[in-house]
Length: 148
Image (cartoon, rainbow, N blue to C red):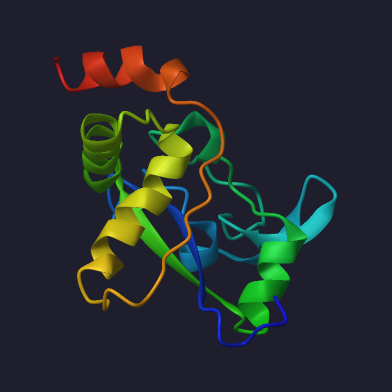
Protein backbone atom coordinates (compact mmCIF):
# COMPACT_ATOMS: atom_id res chain seq x y z
CA UNK A 1 0.00 0.00 0.00
CA UNK A 2 2.84 2.38 0.80
CA UNK A 3 4.75 1.88 -2.47
CA UNK A 4 3.21 4.45 -4.80
CA UNK A 5 5.09 2.91 -7.75
CA UNK A 6 2.84 -0.14 -7.47
CA UNK A 7 -0.42 0.32 -9.36
CA UNK A 8 -3.28 -1.43 -7.58
CA UNK A 9 -6.52 -2.44 -9.27
CA UNK A 10 -9.59 -4.05 -7.76
CA UNK A 11 -11.99 -5.89 -10.04
CA UNK A 12 -15.68 -6.21 -9.34
CA UNK A 13 -18.50 -8.00 -11.16
CA UNK A 14 -20.37 -6.21 -13.93
CA UNK A 15 -22.50 -9.34 -14.25
CA UNK A 16 -24.84 -9.00 -17.23
CA UNK A 17 -23.88 -5.36 -17.65
CA UNK A 18 -23.62 -2.11 -15.74
CA UNK A 19 -26.70 -0.91 -17.58
CA UNK A 20 -28.76 -3.72 -16.00
CA UNK A 21 -29.73 -4.51 -12.43
CA UNK A 22 -27.86 -7.81 -12.79
CA UNK A 23 -24.49 -6.77 -11.40
CA UNK A 24 -22.74 -6.29 -8.08
CA UNK A 25 -20.51 -3.34 -8.98
CA UNK A 26 -20.75 -1.68 -5.59
CA UNK A 27 -17.70 0.57 -5.90
CA UNK A 28 -18.51 1.58 -9.46
CA UNK A 29 -22.24 2.21 -9.08
CA UNK A 30 -22.85 2.29 -5.34
CA UNK A 31 -23.30 5.15 -2.94
CA UNK A 32 -22.31 5.41 0.70
CA UNK A 33 -24.85 4.17 3.18
CA UNK A 34 -25.31 1.76 6.07
CA UNK A 35 -25.63 -1.96 5.47
CA UNK A 36 -25.41 -4.73 8.05
CA UNK A 37 -24.25 -2.33 10.73
CA UNK A 38 -21.50 -0.43 8.94
CA UNK A 39 -21.16 2.37 6.41
CA UNK A 40 -19.79 1.50 3.03
CA UNK A 41 -20.42 1.91 -0.66
CA UNK A 42 -23.41 -0.23 -1.48
CA UNK A 43 -26.13 -0.69 -4.03
CA UNK A 44 -29.23 0.73 -2.40
CA UNK A 45 -32.61 2.21 -3.22
CA UNK A 46 -33.73 5.78 -2.39
CA UNK A 47 -34.67 4.72 1.15
CA UNK A 48 -31.25 3.17 1.76
CA UNK A 49 -32.40 -0.46 1.48
CA UNK A 50 -29.97 -2.88 -0.18
CA UNK A 51 -30.84 -3.73 -3.77
CA UNK A 52 -30.81 -7.26 -5.13
CA UNK A 53 -27.47 -7.97 -6.80
CA UNK A 54 -26.13 -10.57 -9.19
CA UNK A 55 -22.78 -12.10 -10.01
CA UNK A 56 -21.93 -15.31 -11.78
CA UNK A 57 -19.45 -15.76 -8.91
CA UNK A 58 -21.49 -16.52 -5.82
CA UNK A 59 -18.85 -15.02 -3.53
CA UNK A 60 -19.25 -11.62 -5.18
CA UNK A 61 -23.03 -11.23 -5.10
CA UNK A 62 -23.21 -8.91 -2.12
CA UNK A 63 -24.64 -5.36 -2.25
CA UNK A 64 -21.86 -3.83 -0.13
CA UNK A 65 -18.11 -3.87 0.19
CA UNK A 66 -15.70 -3.84 3.11
CA UNK A 67 -14.55 -0.59 4.71
CA UNK A 68 -10.93 -1.00 3.58
CA UNK A 69 -11.98 -1.01 -0.08
CA UNK A 70 -14.11 2.09 0.57
CA UNK A 71 -11.13 3.86 2.10
CA UNK A 72 -8.77 2.82 -0.70
CA UNK A 73 -11.25 4.09 -3.27
CA UNK A 74 -11.76 7.38 -1.42
CA UNK A 75 -8.03 8.09 -1.20
CA UNK A 76 -7.62 6.96 -4.83
CA UNK A 77 -4.97 4.38 -3.92
CA UNK A 78 -6.80 1.59 -5.75
CA UNK A 79 -8.57 1.91 -9.09
CA UNK A 80 -11.70 -0.23 -9.31
CA UNK A 81 -12.86 -1.67 -12.62
CA UNK A 82 -15.51 -4.15 -13.71
CA UNK A 83 -15.59 -7.40 -15.67
CA UNK A 84 -18.77 -8.92 -17.04
CA UNK A 85 -19.82 -12.57 -17.01
CA UNK A 86 -18.56 -13.31 -20.53
CA UNK A 87 -15.11 -11.88 -19.82
CA UNK A 88 -15.00 -13.80 -16.54
CA UNK A 89 -15.91 -17.10 -18.19
CA UNK A 90 -13.44 -16.53 -21.03
CA UNK A 91 -10.65 -15.98 -18.48
CA UNK A 92 -11.76 -19.05 -16.48
CA UNK A 93 -11.53 -21.21 -19.60
CA UNK A 94 -8.28 -19.71 -20.87
CA UNK A 95 -6.38 -20.15 -17.59
CA UNK A 96 -7.76 -23.67 -17.24
CA UNK A 97 -6.72 -24.65 -20.77
CA UNK A 98 -3.37 -22.89 -21.01
CA UNK A 99 -2.01 -23.34 -17.49
CA UNK A 100 -4.04 -26.21 -16.05
CA UNK A 101 -5.14 -23.94 -13.21
CA UNK A 102 -8.89 -23.93 -12.55
CA UNK A 103 -9.57 -20.55 -10.94
CA UNK A 104 -12.54 -19.71 -8.77
CA UNK A 105 -15.01 -17.55 -10.68
CA UNK A 106 -14.31 -14.77 -8.18
CA UNK A 107 -10.63 -14.79 -9.18
CA UNK A 108 -11.45 -15.20 -12.87
CA UNK A 109 -12.72 -11.60 -12.81
CA UNK A 110 -9.20 -10.44 -11.86
CA UNK A 111 -7.60 -12.72 -14.43
CA UNK A 112 -9.84 -11.25 -17.14
CA UNK A 113 -8.74 -7.73 -16.30
CA UNK A 114 -5.09 -8.76 -16.10
CA UNK A 115 -5.34 -10.30 -19.57
CA UNK A 116 -6.87 -7.04 -20.83
CA UNK A 117 -4.14 -4.76 -19.48
CA UNK A 118 -1.29 -7.18 -20.30
CA UNK A 119 -1.80 -6.45 -24.00
CA UNK A 120 -0.59 -2.89 -23.45
CA UNK A 121 2.36 -3.70 -21.21
CA UNK A 122 6.02 -4.22 -21.99
CA UNK A 123 7.80 -7.49 -21.28
CA UNK A 124 9.69 -5.76 -18.44
CA UNK A 125 6.49 -5.00 -16.53
CA UNK A 126 4.91 -7.42 -14.06
CA UNK A 127 1.32 -8.20 -13.16
CA UNK A 128 0.51 -9.92 -9.90
CA UNK A 129 -2.96 -11.46 -9.63
CA UNK A 130 -4.29 -12.81 -6.37
CA UNK A 131 -6.00 -16.16 -6.95
CA UNK A 132 -8.24 -17.01 -4.04
CA UNK A 133 -10.25 -20.17 -3.74
CA UNK A 134 -10.45 -23.19 -5.97
CA UNK A 135 -12.28 -23.42 -9.25
CA UNK A 136 -13.18 -27.08 -8.95
CA UNK A 137 -16.26 -25.91 -7.02
CA UNK A 138 -17.28 -23.90 -10.09
CA UNK A 139 -16.33 -26.39 -12.84
CA UNK A 140 -19.70 -28.16 -13.05
CA UNK A 141 -21.57 -24.84 -13.05
CA UNK A 142 -19.34 -23.45 -15.82
CA UNK A 143 -19.71 -26.61 -17.91
CA UNK A 144 -23.51 -26.45 -17.59
CA UNK A 145 -23.59 -22.69 -18.22
CA UNK A 146 -21.47 -23.01 -21.35
CA UNK A 147 -23.19 -26.26 -22.40
CA UNK A 148 -19.88 -28.14 -22.53
